[in-house]
Length: 114
Image (cartoon, rainbow, N blue to C red; front, side):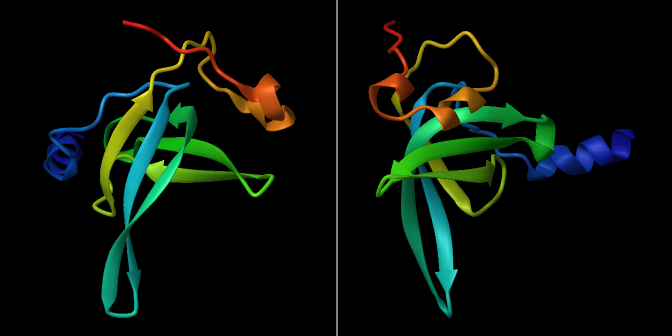
């Protein structure tokens, strides 16, 4: 088991971003189309963080053209360039799946001030 942990430690990002559930983030993702690569920015609210270690993932939700879109990103994947925290949110839940049923102002999250 220790050998697996050592291999996983090498693949993990040393400067993993620090963000929590409820934060609004910008995720810079590398997208390959044919032989060209570009960076696409996906901005939304983090509604879940799962697992831990090398297999850690987070789910980002946003509303695009009146339709809710969720995307799951692996935190330590090489395709995720960086994660910027735009706004810190104040929530009391580990998973914010209840936001799926809410629209408009009901889906807002309070800001956390440091």
